[in-house]
Image (tube, rainbow, N blue to C red; front, side, top):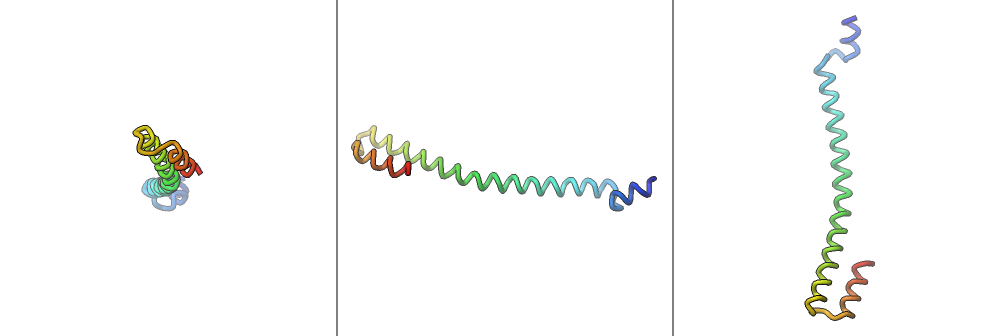
Length: 79
């Protein structure tokens, strides 16, 4: 019985099992990190878009740009 167990574990016993679990955990972690980094770039772009809109709203509120300029810039940002 013990011989079958050792053959099943690849001859490495618990060290092999733990190594395999660590290996697959690392692979899954890398995939999740890659997906987060790719989706994070889109979020960063959207944040910049909202930041730009906030800036032109502030400039309009301070009177630095008029209504026509504000509408043009807003339209350009939302395209």
